[in-house]
Length: 268
Ligand code: G3P
Ligand code: CA
Image (tube, rainbow, N blue to C red; front, top):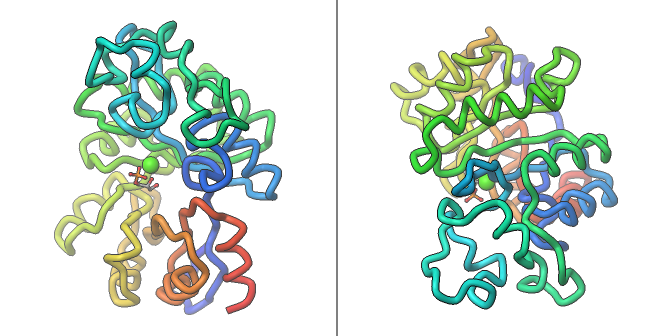
């Protein structure tokens, strides 16, 4: 979508299920990507971090506290940072009960488990490298895992975008594997836009910072693959905001409620 934005062709934005369909199932779990698939959405977003013993896991916060029962299982280990727990310890945690008793026993997935479920569900992934400053080398490690799982094969590359709030991290991903589609999370200035366009294909800002003028300015710059930069906006969870943001000309909308956004786009 949006690749011919400069020609004035308006297309409906891609709808991306944020942390999976996270309004309806616990975020960043296999249940949340299964839910997105059942609702008929192919694009999901996640957050990748690393355990103490070097396993890549899918979780948003740098602490386990909000989305698991870690306080009960390991009471003496505040502030319960992901990087201070082994994969085996994290595998014991319940990542579903905080959301609803119906999801008791849901686990924090490893990235490997997550990629296999995405493959099984025929989904596409907007993978966020979260807090890369805490995890030196996480870019290489993530690409190695993706490669081992077949996700860097030419025929699968159009099912993957790797994004981060860290421009350095995205630059590293681009340098390691230039064929990967990349996204920078934030609202770069005009100067930054031209710098970042050497290594990022997408610019993904908070919807609150957006305007038609900004989206047009981003679309006017070519990315590393010689195509106009694209814009995925986050995180839009209601119909009227979805219509407003679509009106700015964005290429994608990242949402906890993909069904609500799709219904809104179909009716505006
Ligand atoms: O994909 C965009 C969005 O996920 C960025 O914010 O905090 O939800 O990771 P956050
Ligand atoms: Ca994210």
